[in-house]
Image 1 (cartoon, rainbow, N blue to C red):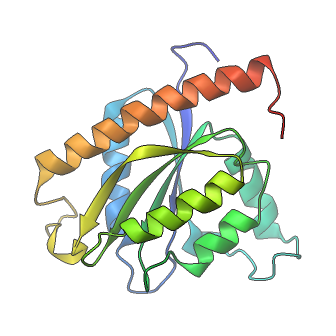
Image 2 (cartoon, rainbow, N blue to C red):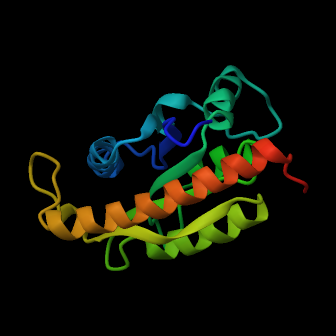
Length: 190
């Protein structure tokens, strides 16, 4: 990969509930990331993937998602906080793969009630650390998210949300390039 080649970033919507707010947040972030430039974006909605809840089974959904994850240079997880944690379908998606996450950076865009999903993010940091992934310090977080977006799906505090997303993307792209180059030079030892 040349320094001017676009980085491949998978944006993963972690909730699959019928009344979820994740697509609103993810669509906004996807648009901001597209405007940021230099990124080849892959929006992955776990509600559309259909992973099995049985981790020992290999199925068509698991097989079809694997190359999308393996081909990513970096990830952005869009996750709500449910009962002080992250959604079960996201855990299934994480645990269904191993090598696809290794030595790659992961950023978080969270949403929820009073904590804005940050308690879920802290748990996800521990899980991804175990999988040898690097989590980005900066996050984008929306507390009381249902009151933070207009009817068109744009944050009411556009300047604040965009500044947070830009800082996150700067860190994510730095790590993505550094780790991509390192993996290309020497395979990751685990």
